[in-house]
Image (cartoon, rainbow, N blue to C red; front, side):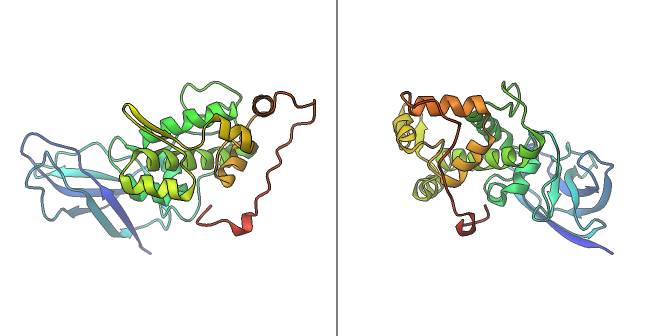
Length: 269
């Protein structure tokens, strides 16, 4: 039995030798690391008239043997010279997010959690999502005192909280991209209440600074995200934030008085 998979927004590598890419090879694998099997090779139409400015490509195959699996694309020119493979992506992403007891800095997992990011940041090689993810991981690590992302210091993420770490990075990546992306995305972020700061060059606007955080007693203005961050934070990190927000508080067990009705949450969270 064969299955249909569609891959949206893939841009071939830029070329300056006037040799356009003419085909794309679709490969599948049961695991992210392989082994890889070619599903089919599809002709590109139209061929890019200027290979230094390749167009985004949408590709569909109905020859896949895996109902859900990992897929990658390889572009070919008329001489059958091949591009480096694209980063593997799980398809369909809506089935499951890979499970692991260790947090991994993997853009494929973040794309599986956030279809919106997949739509906004088309796949390429290297994956441009890595840049936004790196900033998000650094911010989540600093807020929670967890070792999240390359070179991050802090306590390891417990196995039972790895899904929270992935969700936190996905949500923070969305926030950053909304704030620093297009004007439409900035308006989306500000109006949803998730983004409270914006900067570009020497210009900046602040909407949720330390004073606001202290007054609200929250790590983020979005109550969904604040609860995830607080659940992910280490005990010492929680004490730090509580003391920062209320330095005169009497000694008390660490607690976070934030209630949120998850049954009423909007969107996919």
